Figure 1 (tube, helix red, strand yellow):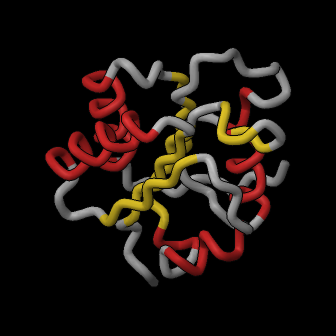
Figure 2 (cartoon, helix red, strand yellow):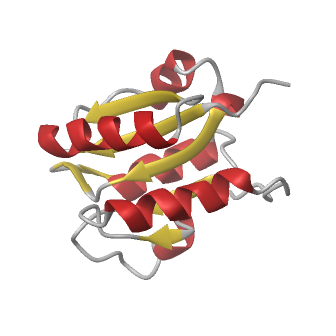
Length: 134
C-alpha cells in the first residue's frame, strides 16, 4: 500500500500558491506538494502525476479555479475516482448546500495558521475514511 504523502493545493492566484508552498514546506517537510493554478487538467492526469489516488494525503482548494471549473468540481471528480480522504475548502465564495458534504472543513485561505493546524489534525488521524461517491 502506497504512503499517503502528497498534499494537493489548487488556487487561481499565483501569490496564494507561492504562500502555500512556503507554509507547507515548513510545516509538512516529509510530504510531496502538488500545487496548481486554475488550469484544468484531466483528473486521471492529476492522479498519475502524484503516483496514484492512494498517495493523496489531503486536498485543499479554492472555489474559483476556472470560470467553468470550480474547486468542488475537482473534489467531486477525485472522490468519484476513489479518493476517500480529507478535503478543505479555502475559497472566499460560499459553497452551495449540495457541495458542502464534499469538504471536511471550510477555512479562509488568508488564515494560514488555522489551515495548517487543521491540516495537521487531519493528517495525524489514522482511522480510515469511508469512500464517498457524489
